[in-house]
Length: 261
Ligand SMILES: C[S@@+](CC[C@H](N)C(=O)[O-])C[C@H]1O[C@@H](n2cnc3c(N)ncnc32)[C@H](O)[C@@H]1O
View 1 (cartoon, protein in one colour):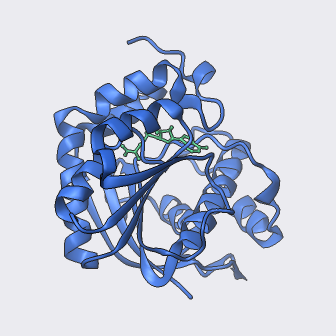
View 2 (cartoon, protein in one colour; view 1 turned 90 degrees about the vertical axis):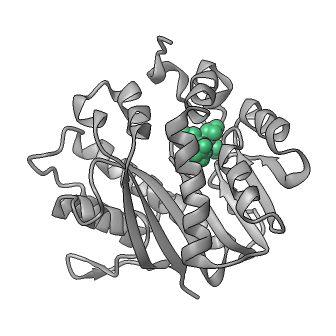
């Protein structure tokens, strides 16, 4: 499928376009199915048994289906901005999950109710820029976006990316019960420890478990409990969009984060 990703990926309903068909094909292949089963099992192993599990940007419901197998008695909730993805998820999981179409992040969603919020294989296109104004976060993001020799993106786009990630992190925290879990599954070329120093610092900042950036204290939302890395062909999701050969190898890491009070 030859897709003009730049033209399609605009706003929360981006996946209502041909990108949604591309994603559905990919999410149903063997590499993704294996990843979803592994993520659900890793949540059971590291986090325990739960009542309320949120799949943030749930796509066509493949992860919800895997979660339902492992947590048959949990109340599963899926949020996504695309009608196409929500209706495919409904067809797949039926009454096993409550599904809601909403642009994310969304600070009017119920607060602090989930035992686990999972955010897997992210590819969010944000609409609401209004919450971007935390001055301390902007100052930290400015420092962290200073280009390093390995960066191919411009300083401006690194900065914007960091700020958007913080908005998402705040929203993930808003959904979590204090002391409970946010599970982030992130495409990566290497394990968290294998990333370069600057990439590790950016990840800490983005996912809200950094305390200081160049001596400045930024708000902390989570503590990192554990990080596990898996090699997987799912990394080709990124390659399809970037056409960068570097994005042909790697896999994903799962970060288990505890929500701070
Ligand atoms: C790469 S897919 C991942 C889906 C799912 N997490 C999974 O692992 O199968 C990204 C999902 O994010 C959704 N999305 C993108 N931008 C969004 C936004 N601003 N608000 C809500 N959903 C969004 C898309 O509709 C799509 O379902």
